[in-house]
Image (cartoon, rainbow, N blue to C red; front, side):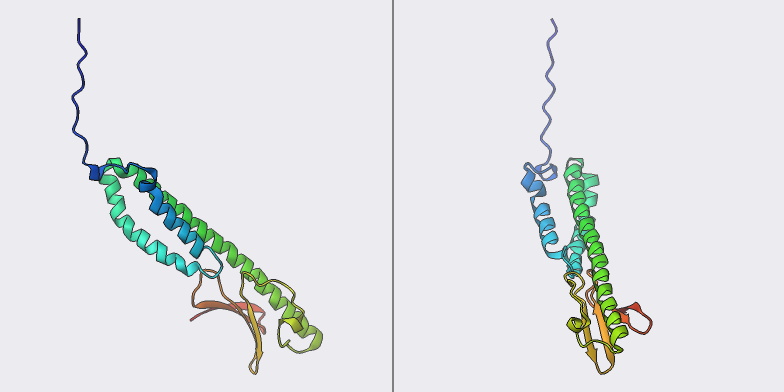
Length: 179
């Protein structure tokens, strides 16, 4: 009779190099930070906050990518964490692109109302109520004013911090203005 030879027991790997034992330990902080990024940065006008999440994440990846290569036991969960971050960052950027489209549409509606009032009355309106604008300015945060120098209409882009688009009533086009 032949006896089955038991495989020699291998020494356990260094626990520092092993994958985390629990789901929360592996992905909890990443999921919490991604949720925080969605809450803080995925709203109109708050796109600039994305940088406070992306820069530390990029710096962390300078450490994490080599560790994923050097330590195969960590490769799966490190790459999955990077994937979670990438999906969240892309979702925030896509949301802000949509907010920018909505902002431009709202600001265009304001410009059309103001120009229609000017054609009817021969002068610019004092405010949007006088122009007959009844729309919603949720995304654009468009502002109109009439001062001694003429009418001013501008809106703030969703990702921008110190920039705006101003409407040139003479040329009837938007001009990008960075501070």
